[in-house]
Amino acid sequence: MAKYHRNDVASLVLHSPSSSTATSGNHFRLCKAFSGSSFRRKIFDAVSCGASSRHRHQLMQEMLNDAAPKPPPPPTTTTTTIRSVLKESNEPKKTDSKVVKKAINNGKPEKLVDLLNLAEAESDSETTKKVQALEELKRLVKDLQMENEENKRVAASRVRLLTKEEPETRVTLAMLGTIPPLVAMLDFEDSDSQIAALYALLNLGIGNDPNKAAIVKAGAVHKMLKLIESPNKPSQAVSDAIVANFLGLSALDSNKPIIGSSGAIPFLVKTLKILDKKSGSQARHDALRALYNLSISPSNISFILEADLIPFLLNTLEDMEVSERILAILSNVVSAPEGRKGISVAPEAFPILVDVLNWTDAPGCQEKASYILMVMAHKAYGDRQAMIEAGIVSSLLELTLLGSMLAQKRASRILEVLRVDKGKQVSESFGGNSSAAVSAPIYGSSSSSTNQYGKEFLVVEEGMMSEEKKAVKQLVQQSLQNNMKRIVNRANLPQDFVPSEHLKSLTASSTSKSLPF
Image (cartoon, rainbow, N blue to C red; front, side, top):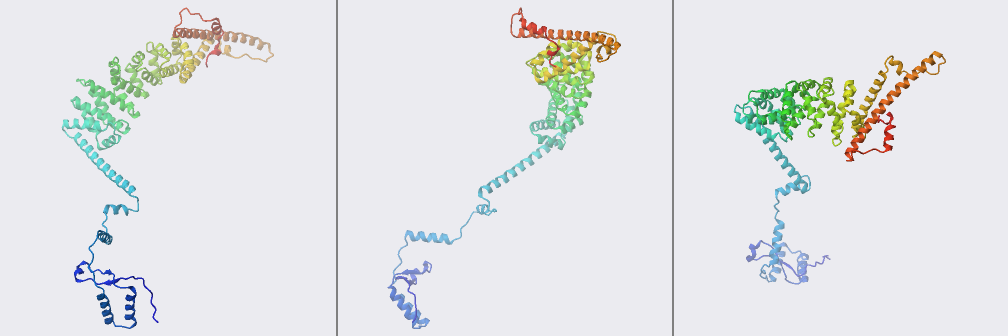
């Protein structure tokens, strides 16, 4: 018995399209016909009877003819929508190439890809800008090498502007050969061209030691001095530019001896004296700073002394605007023997320097002045006497109490030198055999001669020590009295103020132990 599976097909049959619907795409329609049992029975009979393919075709044709075909219903909105959706699903989608590129870019997220693309674009733009800037610099150098003075002046002004705040531009222009034509422009008679070239050279040397050395090597220092010494004196603007260049070039150690020996120091001193009364002048400060740079080199001390700079600096020391810079120059000068001699022979040098020790509102000046006096006190006995005569002891005692830590140390060193020097004076006042006077007595000997001479030595030593104590005691009392007068003046107390008995007893009983050594 043949077995078959029951099929839940429901009452549906395949209906071939009619001629009227042939143009609709040759699709089959599912139509309602007859019951499922009759449909299955006809299929079973055709198969079980072994009908031929022709019979089966006729049977199928009869089955289709039995079902009266119905006209297709008008397409609804839902059917149209389904068809459009199916059509879109069957058609291949067109994707944007940019999106595909981003999606397949090594599997990286879209934001990361965007950042990488942006960085790449910025890098390309920066490279383009650098190429354009390099081409502009090459054109400037080409203009500087031309014969036309107007083009050179414009190019020098452009170099001055570009090198004002761009370190890389300074290096690039120097490598392209900008310095020699700018130095050659100092021979022009046009002041505008001179100023443009001077400030272009100044900016090229800012923070660039190789450029400073190249400018000096190109002969800029001698051309500047030649410009100053020419019959047609340069304008004040040109002089100020030259001073500024000397300041910048003198910052390099290898340039200091060259500039100092070229004759620039007398020009700077002259400029300083001319601008002495013009407070706040930039050229004045530049000249002082240039002289400070040059004074660092010991080989320039003699040129500074020949320019008669020391007396002028000492007389200008009262100007608080430049006093610390002046003391810095003197601190360099005092390091050389000829410099110490120049300060020592200057009129009123020690009273002026001692007075600076009392500037409690300027600790930097106190430190530098105490350094100058300390060096000179260590080196020369005559200078120590001049310091004592100028009243340095009271100022030093006050400085050890009220000065900065560095000033206190230096003041103590000076006081120690003066104390040792005072002890030598006392020992020399006895005359005779000074070595016997300062030698210690010999104790523990039973010889009568030794005891006899030992007693004499004790008497001499006691006399010497008493004289030394008296000298130191007098020195301390004088210093304390001077300090008391200063305190009274600062406190605005009456001039007839009388110290208490306790204070008098303190000053009367003070010894050398009270000195802060």
